Image 1 (cartoon, rainbow, N blue to C red):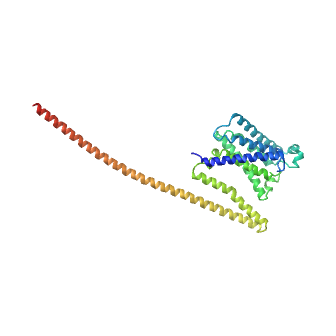
Image 2 (cartoon, rainbow, N blue to C red):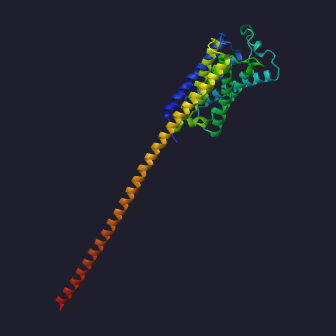
Image 3 (cartoon, helix red, strand yellow):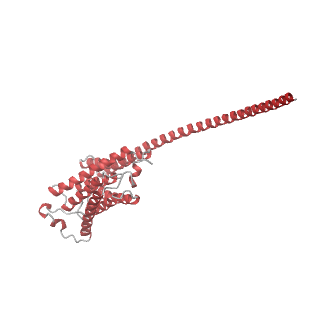
Length: 329
């Protein structure tokens, strides 16, 4: 089944823009340190964004050898940085790894555990992404990316609703800037090979793919917007927390009811079109059957006329033979 080229090209360009933003963010972190991220995080963002950026031009063929080696080195670097951070923080052996590097610039900031896990997942995903022509490698890369995207989403939602305790109680929380860039990077990785693997269902040139893409876009944005508006109203003392929760519930109910109604109507329109097409095909089949019977009848008539003509020719030949025999006598 063919992919929608317009959607695929748009998503690939979005992925390129996201990878450039990731690289620039990491470079700003390395050069200026005013964006509240550590040196290892900045370096990992640069390597991850550069690895993805180097792979994007090669979407229908394996990358060139030098590009492939460069992307592989950058991907492994990202994964190793994430693994080192995760081991240091998860085992309690963090001996001030980031405080040792550029301590005079860091001013006490530390790397979070979920940041290390995300870098490991994304770096590993980028390694598998280079072998996108292998069916299961692409799915593995996208699955790892989705896991990192979920972690980033928790962080972004936590900052939005000021509920940091559910993920930042035991370890230092992920900075909001890092969470946003992680989200951008994860979407860029998914969009880079959108016509392969798990995301292929969104780019097929069929109505259901367009519907799925529309539903996912709505589900990722509108519920968060509704929650943010209700939280803002609570902070402005327009209503209490119970009312805010009630408004969020009502907003989500109305939102998904509208989505269900709109998509049900779209499906019914498709079913109606299919029914009309099916009816037209049945009419054409009936007409074809009638035409076939008429042709068969005409064929029988022609066969009868042919037989009659053959009989006349036979009678003429016999008469001619009789006349010849009389002449001889």
